[in-house]
Image (cartoon, rainbow, N blue to C red; front, side):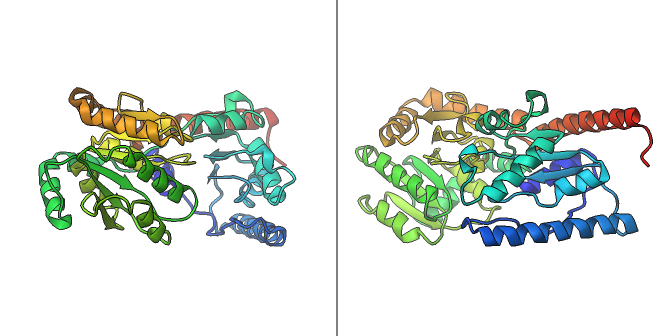
Length: 370
């Protein structure tokens, strides 16, 4: 997502400078580590400002940060913006009031202060926007729907569906004429493993149907994932392993539907990739799923944590050829219109133009700086 945002900013005509490679992430809730990160961030901010004063670093007109939250606060941007008098923008910031006073309190407070300072905040999901309204006025919340950096590989793959299906059938010993279900996800403990387990439970209710599941992904929880599917015959579930980004469009194009419970996933770009290729999606309504999958237009959205509902949606899509065709045709159009680099670029252009215009007006009102 960070790379996609950089591509969109460049496409909008902005020159980009990566201010630092500093990582402020603390997953453990370690107060001592957070204190060290805060101190290091302060020193790096001071170093950046010295570089600007010495003109070894160009003075930015605006600071843009991504994925700001209590476990990974921005220790540089707010201080630099205050010192230079430039606008601060935050994309996909999140605010979780329940973290106040908890193990990440210092990061929570730093993120809260940064969000309050932002000239504009670009939430990616409605849930994030609702929480952010506690900190900033609605006029400064400017939604930025999740988007793909490049839809061309998916569009191109969709034109070669038959060829991709034939090739994968040979490679993995699949029956070309049976329905192909697809899951694409890393295999790790937590939400991903929970999704795999819910998917296996849903497929238990479809044993009377003639389907094959292709699982694309790998990771430290692979053994547990395989055990979740142990009741299914070997010819039913095929583990395809980790695939390169360039190989994925062929899987999307060849399959009949992507099925994924999406447990606790705020943004699941796999769902967008599938739709961009014309692959109907069946997913559960966690996080921002319903914002990137249009129910009964580009996919079917089910109740979360309900394997029976997921199974019923898969069964419906298997049985309704007209619905399947409608979803396959609508997906690429919706993604191109609302979730493409062009769509994101237009939104970023609007927001940055408004923010910079407001800043120029404010400077004019303040008069020359001393």
